[in-house]
Amino acid sequence: MEIRTSSPMRVRAAHVADWQALNAIDSTAAAGDDARSARIRRWLEQGSVLVAEDPSGIVGYSVLEYTFFEQGFITMLMVSPNARRRGIGAHLLQAAEATCSAPKLFTSTNVSNHPMQSLLQRLGWHPVGMVHGLDEGDPELFYLCRPAQLQPLRS
Image (cartoon, rainbow, N blue to C red; front, side, top):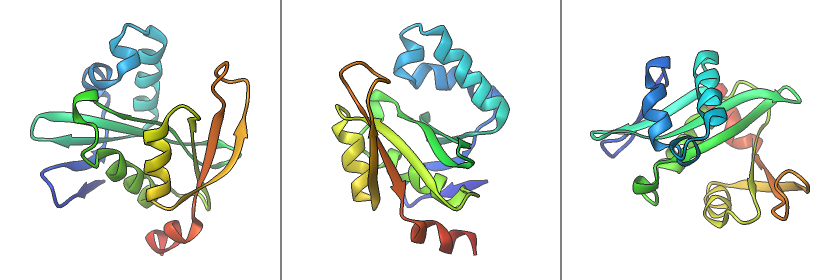
């Protein structure tokens, strides 16, 4: 699976060989979090990762899983800190929408993550709930991709 964009960026299914590049752009893994690095490897092995790359290499990734009540859930959306605000997150979300095989697609973000909230709202996602207690003092907001955004892509 590969999605070409109007820019020199493309989105494709990731390979296990992308592991080091993903660790380098993931701010948590790059800071030495071995658990995140292991999680990235597991996601790659499960075939759950899409990557965005431009001529410089991999600049972002997303993880689409089906463990949230058997619905699609974007577990992770990460864009390299030096590549943010260039539409990469939007391309990754739209690619996840295009590949989601469940009737519903969800994601979540912390209340403190205003850029992600703005991105989701700009792409037509709707807030559907909040969970307290995951990150102390920073509740998690849950969003749903409008089903109409998913249906034409599967027909």
